[in-house]
Image 1 (cartoon, helix red, strand yellow):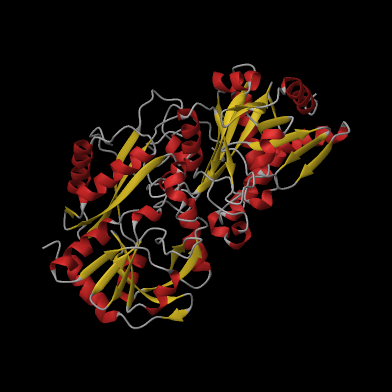
Image 2 (cartoon, each protein chain N blue to C red):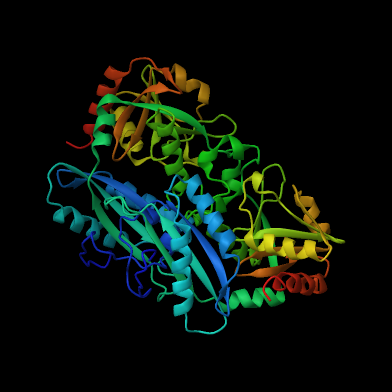
Length: 276
Length: 276
């Protein structure tokens, strides 16, 4: 818990009237921890604060979040990687008005490791909004990382029920948005591209780390609108996030994409070079 | 809890890794209970089952839900009205695979009673999707009553921050959708109209009860698309839901609507006539 209380995740700690539960009214972050080191903790905390502001939650005490993150990391006894989840909700509806805030260590499932190695098949799915709405309609919370992820989970289930592993959301004007839990990165020649947060998506922490490393190595990076039709013709299409790192898309809407195994190795090495 | 365990809402009963909390991955219903009688419990349970199916949750055991509802109602000691919340989530991510299911009694705040009496000011807010998406994109879960209500709560906060009490969502083609937690009912002459669930909204249980009573009393009822422009000119515009009952909209986007106090009395009497 953010107050420093250490708790066992096998026991209940959340009230039934917590608005995070009853209304999905809260925000979260998922941080990758490798060998006791959290990756991009600063950018994750910045994004937590940005999401919280979009939901009119009290500004998070980032020093306290850093402390509780360190506490969970220090208590994690298994070796290797795990996911550090930061959860911040509006708190119980009938409580004393205080928010709910905790950090949680979670094991990474074998499926994620398989996908990192073997790549994934993805389906493009219509996300149903036009990017022009984003600025006009802040109540839609587009670009906030909220606990209201039922739609994202449904999209992943839909993809899996239709022979794919992952989904890529497309806006109603054909713009590429993001995956349900990942940022899109496209490679053509010596250029890496991703889509801009202004179209209603999350700014990617792992994508930012990758681009940082890429720029240092002489790549050109672009953050600009990408049209759906460009996905099929790219030399490499990748889903990027903290826990999945750089995951290659080998099949899109049932069609095999150009072989990007070497590119995947190259991008992965770039990304890992950020964490010597 | 659905298994019959009686629990105190002041103590925690939910695990931090419950997917209802971490992902808003679950469904709910809110049932009005008046003098120990739940209103429209059958239709609420049917809708719970429909929402669960849209989220690929196991079909709820409706007999067990009825039992647990009765249990909460029988334990409620305060007199008058209260809200019975039914919550059904995918359960803990690292649990034994079982879902989380509970019924919860909740007091109705004074604000709701004030709004029932005095009416509300509402803002129309763009919901950002076109109704044609609904059938094509089941992963958007439009029309499912999920725990992912952050957007609905943000819309209400936006309305309150801009001098109103309530919001009415409008689709990108100008179709009237619903309120964040209510169905829209429009009155013109002897006709009551509401918007069809096929455009991506919840079928209203209270609206259905009102229409039943209205039809018995000789009203014409229509479930059909309504355009935003029709709202301003209606004799009566109402927000209808279990807990708010029939609430009159007296002001829309800052403009005072025709006086519908008498109409409100008439509709309220019709609705109450369903529960003799």
